[in-house]
Image (tube, rainbow, N blue to C red):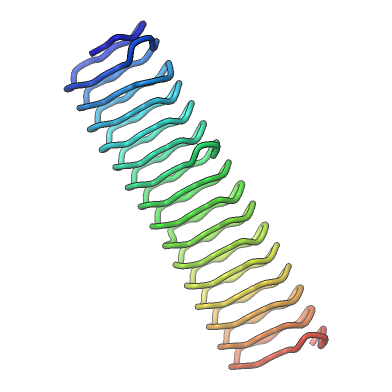
Amino acid sequence: SSGGITTSIIGGDTNTISVGLKNNGILGGRSASITSGNYSATIGGFNPTNTGGASVVLAGYSNTNNGGSSSVVGGSYNTNDGGSSSIIGGNQNTIDSGSDNSVISGGKTNNISNDYSVISGGTDNTVSGYKSGIIGSENSTVSQNKSFIAGGADNSVSGFNSSIVGGRNNTVSSDNSGIVGGIENLVTNVDSFIAGGTGNTVTNIKSSIIGGEDNSSGALNTVILGGKQNTISTGLNNN
């Protein structure tokens, strides 16, 4: 049925545009609905819902767009509540209300809850930092601004301008720091770095561990290269 002003439904089955809306259109599809907002469209797909003004839901299965100037393209059970944001493909991906200018591309059960952020692929990833992103990871989290994770699984970044690339169960909780690869590595202080290895920990400023296992650096401006269960204690700086 079409009860709006300057509205069109072309083809399809059991499609609906609510009364009082203007300049909306539904092209094909089944059980499509535009229930609020103007200047919007749904094109194809099954059970798409569009309530955001100047927005589009294109193809897919049971996708929902509630954000203004936003879109959901393909995929299934995706929900976009962000303004000027897009979900492209994937399954059960979500962009929260107030998360503007963000994008999820593919993947499953990924979530963005801040502005200018991106998730591309992967599963069960969460970005709550501003201008942050996750690419192709699993069960990973970025909760601080201008930070990212690429690949790996079960990784977490909560420091500003920090990153993790690959690996598993790695954590960066400090600013301007990073981990590349490895398993269960931890960086908790600024301007520090771990590359590879297992169970390595850096807890002081401008320090690094490269490889090895269960190594620990608690002093300023230090480096551990490989080995096992090596420790530089707090107060022994520049070693």
